[in-house]
Amino acid sequence: MGYIHYILSYFFLILMVVVSVKAKGYGGSSQQCDMFTGKWVVDESYPLYKPTSTCPFIEREFRCEANGRPDLIYTHYRWQPLSCNLLRFDGQDFLERMRGKSIMFVGDSLSRNQWQSLTCLLHSAVPNSSYTVARVGDVSIFTFTEYEVKVMLDRNVYLVDVVREDIGRVLKLDSIQGSKLWKGIDMLIFNTWHWWYRRGPTQPWDYIQVGNQVLKDMDRMKAFERALTTWARWVDANIDPAKVKVFFQGISPSHYNGTLWNEPSAKSCIREKTPLTGSTYPGGLPPAVGVLKGVLSTIKKPVTLLDITTLSLLRKDGHPSIYGLFGSKGMDCSHWCLSGVPDTWNQILYNLI
Ligand SMILES: *[C@@H]1O[C@H](CO)[C@@H](O)[C@H](O)[C@H]1NC(C)=O
Ligand SMILES: *[C@@H]1O[C@H](CO)[C@@H](O)[C@H](O)[C@H]1NC(C)=O
Image 1 (cartoon, rainbow, N blue to C red):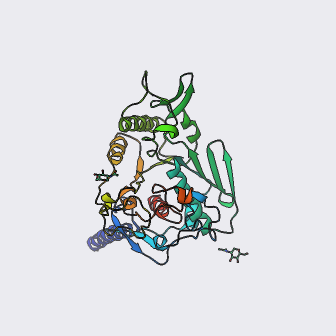
Image 2: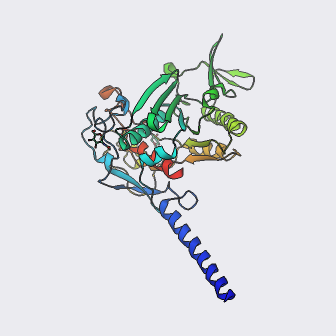
């Protein structure tokens, strides 16, 4: 009798393990599933919110439809990983799980893009729930009052500091005083990249400081790596993983050179209406991705990379082009229309928490 009991309980133990592994694979747990390798498929149940009607506060910069973009097929795509399924974004569940907590995006306008997407995804899920929007210095704060959830944006394009000194504005690769705004936040999502190659009138610094050396300029990729390393050391010294979840929003790609997607006549993303088919990008990854992954591998604390580069590279159709901030006077193939690609970045974030 005892022997049979033993066999039976052993059998059930194995059964339970099998069932839980299967359930995880289906739900898309981070250990089981590579969420970042997949393809874009048309799904008429997307988009998850509609600009103006269910998300009235989208900024002009990302509001492509209202700015006159005529084609809307690009809003009907869903990201399908090859080896598992992602859970659909459930805004109410997200808010319940984050009740009483704060989320902060830190970075440049690509962070603003993802921040806006998240506020839209959440608001459209609970349209009758009250919210407030406030701005304190460089920090924008969107609060879901009933859930006591704050979704914030700290505009900080380099993560390290730019300091005004007698000689001019100095980009200090080893200084990260801006981090004082990140204290006490429950979830941090960092990003920096697009400003590192800025030159001319829109470059927001005059000198660059590495250690004790003050230089007029230096190799920009090396500067990026040094700043990321400063940030990585900050994470190791300051983050308590029991209290704070840290993510890095990966490198968001631009589409200005059609040679990279086998359309050499294309000089920008204008008139691109569909994603690339398949799972790989002919032009390969931007070199910054390798630098970022190298630095992340040196961090001892847990930091999760939202490795969104490849899935976004496939979306040559997702940018505002002439339906962005400057209309036909601009050509924006760096930011993303909303609704659109950053909704998928947030869906993956949801699947990771
Ligand atoms: C929100 O409120 C409106 C008007 O009171 C109501 O018609 C609608 O069903 C509500 N929506 C949700 C999702 O509760
Ligand atoms: C576009 O990419 C190709 C392949 O890397 C390169 O040879 C070409 O110089 C690029 N064109 C521009 C305008 O940057």
